[in-house]
Every structure is written in C-alpha cells, then in structure tokens.
Image (cartoon, rainbow, N blue to C red; front, side):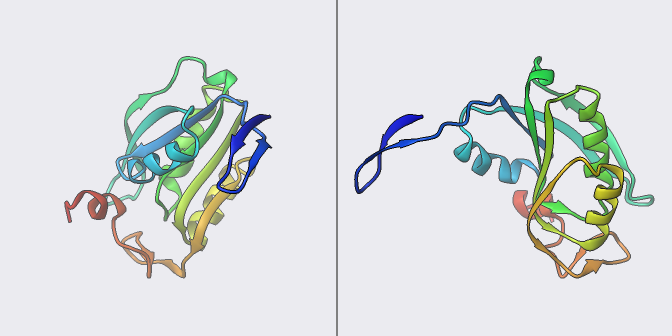
Length: 157
C-alpha cells in the first residue's frame, strides 16, 4: 500500500508489485501500447513482429525482442484487433517458449472466429476486449470492424 492524494483526500492505495511485460504485436499493437504504459508505467516492453500472408492468412514472424527475465514476468500481449486469431495464437505460442509466469491477451475489437481459435489453441490465456463484432469477411477482416488497424493508425491505407 502507498499513500496517495486524491482530489478529495489522502488515502492508502494498493500498488501492483508484479513484474509486468507488455508485448506489442507489431506494428498495430504499438497503437495501444502507449495507453497501456500510462496505466502500467513500470512495465517493460517486448515486441514481436508478425505479418499476415495475404494469400494464406497465416502469420510470418520477422522480429522477436523481449526483456531478459521473462520467466519472472506476467505478460500482457496487445494488438488492436483479434480477427482470424492466427497472429495472436502464433505470438502466444512463441511467448510460451520464454516460460512467463502468466499470459493475457488484450485487444479493442474481436470477432467470434478469432475468439474461438485463440481459446481453442490457448485455453489458458484470458482474452480482454472492448467489443466482439459480427464476423470475418472473405479477406480475413472483421465486419463491421475498422479495416486494417496498422494502416489506420499510421496513415498507410
């Protein structure tokens, strides 16, 4: 517990005492990483670079950089969208090789197909999302969704 001053009065508040690592699935995950760091300013940051092959929709890893003590850390993976679930599942599989204390997945929008795939491949990983949209279209985009999150965030549409 630590003493803090609210706008009304002083109070004792609990502190998060765990070692937390936020892992951004590049590049779209960086769009919500800053907000997560505002909530968890002492968290370390890791990055996993994955892109979705446009024909097969399967993930291809091109980058992986984590803090050195992952086996002593709770990990929160961030990506704005959970569409097919393939990239999220691949990221979680790769992170499990680092043997973190726990894994969680946070996204802004998901669809039933992505939730189903992720929970079937990683039933031990809870999913936290703001909304579950209707479905995937034939191109693997969430409907109604927001389009390609990375393109929207970085203006590369």
